Length: 280
Image (cartoon, rainbow, N blue to C red):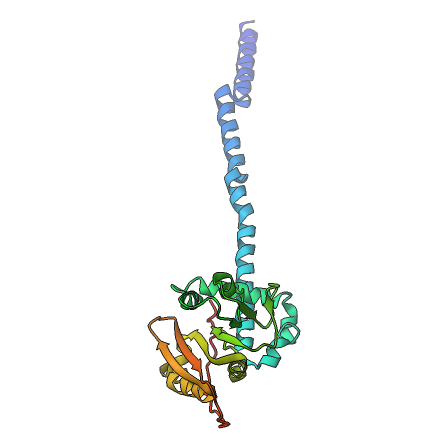
């Protein structure tokens, strides 16, 4: 009898021990749940991470657009500097340019981006020069770009450019102009033709103002000799009034048209090297 009771007692103990082993405690449950929750948190990205990753594509896209736009500007700029005027007129429709839907707009945007890095703008100096004189002087702004000169002075300004979306910019045949301006616009290989046209439309004793990138007139870096260039302009029918090389970015040349010029001598024009921008 005692043996039977003892045997039952041992069986109950074994069953209780087995239950203790199989059933985890409340504390163990809490620890396991916390560990699982931590694992889930590690696997799922945080809200801030999702937000940052969602902004990256947009930022990357903007950078790529800017890089592409800069590439288009350099390509159009090189085309304008290294071809003749007649070729430039068809720039939107020739060769690789067909891939660019708005070549003139992209060029002017890229040009303004480059000019924003200059400490001083040559067009501002020309504006000041005109404001110091009579507002009755009629001005022809050859290669006017965004027609900033016309918007900054009281003079009558004919704003002329190859192409433009600005309705105030015109292509015209004119005469009786007092001042002809070329502000960073002697771009084609046939730039002497531009100066000949300026000479044609200018009144006797009219002014010719030229602002150009300084490196184009630096013989040490492959640029033209400024004296040879000025000599060629004078042979066209002008006298040199003054030269300003004080700015580190550009030069300013001032000429006055001679009252009469009967010379039919062939002019030897120096070559002006292209102003090309480095790829970044």
